[in-house]
Amino acid sequence: MSAPPAAAARLTLVERPDCGLCETMAHELAVLARRERLPPLERIDVDSDPQLLRRHGLDVPVLLLDGLVVCRHRLDAAELLRLLRPGPGGSG
Image (cartoon, rainbow, N blue to C red; front, side, top):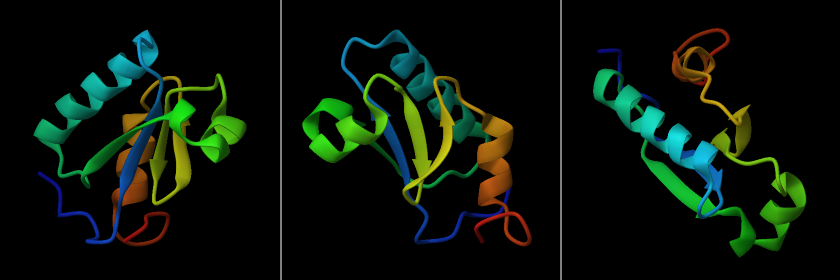
């Protein structure tokens, strides 16, 4: 297992109900979280917030790390782990 992520790090999955890609990304994140230490995941319905709807619309799922886009449509586990890694290129 890798070192714990920064305490302030937040993962947000912007999704839509009955979205197959959204459920797939949520499942892949759960699997990844069993192998790697990830920040807590908050799941938000894109339609519940006009700003999220304007920003992401039909472009879901979107995985955000501290509000910044990590990936869209498919989980990019390598990019997420790179961003969580301390040091240059990572957030910690």
